[in-house]
Image (cartoon, rainbow over all chains, first blue to last red):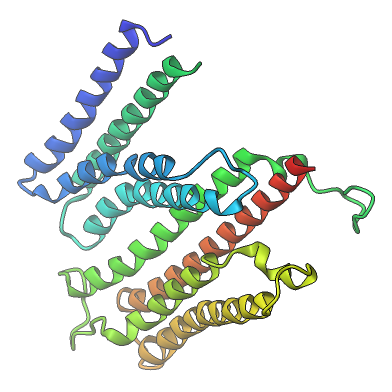
Length: 127
Length: 173
């Protein structure tokens, strides 16, 4: 499933995403939009950490799913943060509209790459 | 389960799906993020060059109080274990756990409703009564929208967590 074509395609998309974000910062000499990259790199972490912390074996104990839910809540928070942060900066005239659009699109591409890479990677480990 | 229901229309099957409640938790996080960044937006906007008010109107601590109340209320509501609400009907859990849970939950809902009401109060008293016009009044409107989003996020999270309870209940039977 996860062949060499998938990996090449994903790395292309990741490179385009980084290109868009770095251009949005460098073209306008305003490096605030690089925060978007940090946001999307941090976004998959809560699910990963909370998935390790929770005990999936005892589903009769309802307290175990609370921490997983918290991780999902934080993930949703970070994903929207990646869109809200450029919009906020644009609204307060810190960056121009073009930079905001480019960083949002680039950030979404980076996040989609990370997500689909984890998805393909986990499918191999399934047994 | 199906014989003891009250209404003619049954609850749709996807409501008890595990995927639906996962999506609900993600949506709650997204809504809370929107509300939080709206609050940050009005604060940043008030100090930026886009704020055209001539005797400068800025966000003060008063504008933050409703948001802080809403966030605290959301924290209180969603840190309660929902199964404790009916704990007094079982004989093995004494010491009035359900009573305490209801009291804390009431405090949480009061904080949440107080936050929303407080944001409307700030909008009316600080921005509408002195008759400010649109770009300035955004600082009050954004506050109200942000607090409504936090409240909506709290409701979505509550519904999603109750969904989980019924799902595990069906599984346990």
